[in-house]
Length: 321
Ligand SMILES: [Zn+2]
Image (cartoon, rainbow, N blue to C red; front, side, top):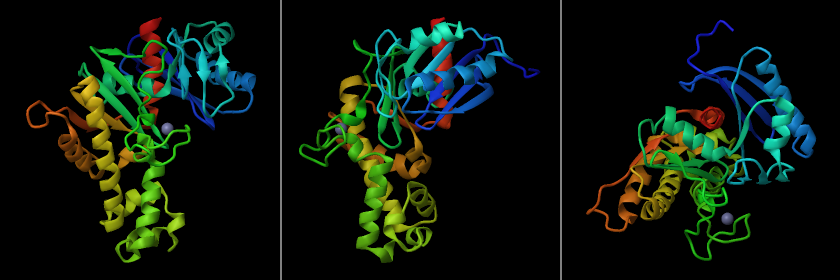
């Protein structure tokens, strides 16, 4: 109330493993107000109760047209059912129907990485671009594809699950049961694994990093690697070089299929900025089929931060309602 907003308001909800974050978003992608609840991850009806409570707190103060839910997992192409959520109890959960009857508002359910990609294209690093592939590098790899200005969901709603594309045949084992998946080489987990190994092997080159970790390589975290790299630590910089190189190689594969004009790199690991982007650009150019004889897609770091999913879900709800 009292805040200057633009046009119709909608609510976006980001369902994390530990927190439900809901936000009222205006037509410029500005978050006007937020509400939070804990996520009772193991109980389906309690999760819905937490979503309804957070949304209800906002609808008691703001007049909104629709609600968009962003959830990690496989969402059906009708954007109604969560087929599978890795971190929550949802299995074939008809989330749209149950929330619509509870909230008495139109509801759409979106994959969280799709929602974040959409937000970057509408309001962030990809603003104005028509052919964008967004990659979220966090614990694993998420992604979203916007072609001809439209979000590509696929026949079954499961498009853009880039993390499990094989980049190394018979490579590192993955939680999905396969080997050599891209996210085993490009993720926060891969970054920390690289740092553990390099710092153990050459502690003399990791003085800054080991200082942050209390001298114990096993205590190194992703945030420490970013901080040490900014301070010029040789091992921390090498870690981003390795991860960035794998990132660029994978992007070349995606470019062969989708031919985007722009890749937007988001997620926690992207906080390293140019230290991640520069090796990715070099590896992308070197790995691209016909490289040197075709225009190169641009690589940009995402701009909207961890709220991208919430903003994107709200905007997609507005467009659908
Ligand atoms: Zn995998």
